[in-house]
Amino acid sequence: MLSRARKNNNMRALIIAAAGVIVVVTLAITYWYSIENYVRQWDTKIYSGVKIEGLDLSGKSKSEAVELLNDELKKILGDKKIIVKVQDKKFQLDYKTIKPQYDIVAAVNEALNYGKDKGLLDKKRLIKGGQATNINLNFKYDSEELNKFEKSIASKIDRKPKDASVNIINQSITINEERSGVVLNKELLDKNLKEALTGAWNKDILIDGEIQLVNAKITKEQLSRIDGVLSSFSTDYSTSTEARANNIAIAAKACNGKIVMPGDIFSYNATLGERTQEKGYMEAPIYKNNEVVDDVGGGICQVSTTLYRAAMRANLKAVERHNHSFKATYSPLGLDATVTWGYLDYKFKNTYDFPIYIEAVTSGRTVSFNIYGSKAGLGSKRYDLVSDEPTVIPAKVTEVNDPTLPEGQVVMDEKPIDGYKVKSYLVTYEDGKEVAREAVAYDTYIKKDGVRRVGTKRE
Image (cartoon, rainbow, N blue to C red; front, side):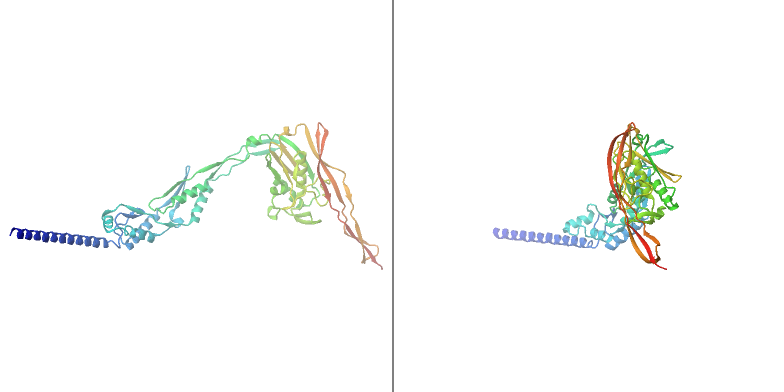
């Protein structure tokens, strides 16, 4: 009897235990389904604590979040500024000027998907109050408008350095002091601005611009060594036409005041630039293709020749120099310097350790050059350019019978021009005596044969 009772008790215990398990399982399933149901309600909502650019979107649907962000964007962009401070100056640009375009839909999709890939219990924890998460908006803007803003700032900040200069009145020399310039560090400003343009919309963008000092290339200290005239030379153009005289005056003015620093090369073509009517040059006779023709800038070779003679007298030797094709009326053979834009130039190098100043003057149909520098640089020496007696290359004259002219009448169609060969020298004098003679150039001037027609027509 006792054994049977014990068996019955064991059975009851098992039944109770099984019932308890069923209850627990049932409760667990019910609880699990309740969590699933709760989480499912957030499938189309943004989890708690999720923000876009600091704006809390907890519980918002996609459409609600997009609408909220668009409304907020309109309010913020109306007042937002890009501000650049450069020392005590402030420059600002309305943010909307750079035409920002935000990808709101992509950011909302990212916010909506946040946490959706996690397990059920993790999802519940996020919904109940997850860790705050901020999503940044991707955006693009008009970089050209930003570039215009940067250029505008630079135009108000940049100041070019001013070189020291020389004023000479009646050979009285005054040296004006140089001035440093400043320039905005545009590369750094552009870099910092673009780094600051992250898409954040809840505050103005503040950037400090930097400036850099730019020193003058020529200083008063350097120019202070210029203390007098090293050499001079003049040529006359009293027989020139008004057009040719005009061109000489323009060319001389372009050379006047030029400073050639030690080691630098003076270029006549670079100094004058292309000779054009816009610059005031007029048509006057020049040698072109072995002919005398009118062309814009005719006459400027007299200026280059005069400068050549003055520079050689200062012992400033040419690094490029060419003679004319025919003899120039204003210069002895071998002592001229012709130029052609883009082809032939006259250049000299300043081989001294002090600056050279060029003074060019036109007065009374005379063009004059004075070369200034340190008088001690010449010492007791002086220099001059001379040439040998030229070798003549005789031109020939071809005689042609012309039956249309009366017998014995002569017409010269082509005037003969003799050619020449000549050698030039730089002569060094010391205490009035020649101490050296250095060959400078061996020039050839071409000949031009003539044509003469003789009449053969009889009456």
